[in-house]
Amino acid sequence: MTNEARRAAVAAYKERKATAGIYAVRCTASGEVWVGAWVDLATIQNRLWFALRQDAHPRRDVLEAWRRHGESRFSFGILETLEDEASPYVRAAQLKDRAQHWREKLAAKPI
Image (cartoon, rainbow, N blue to C red; front, side):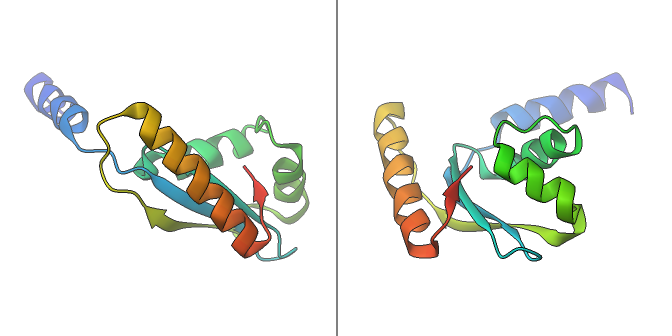
């Protein structure tokens, strides 16, 4: 990749629009579900899987299930996306409220 192509790729990445929302991580072996909220849904699965593969995820229950059942028994899904919000405070409140809604609906734990 040339320097120009690399710069163009970085610029395109920085200009892309992040979509905030609610996601679920499921362990098909145990039936456990974890629900979380994130400001950029396009990046969260890679972040989670990286931490789990490195044996460094802060949620011990998720990490233990990952160790016990393996990566192939885990799935990731987007439950809801949020409309753009100019205020970070309002977006944070919406994410918190919607994540709680989905945790209750799915009898899920936080992640």
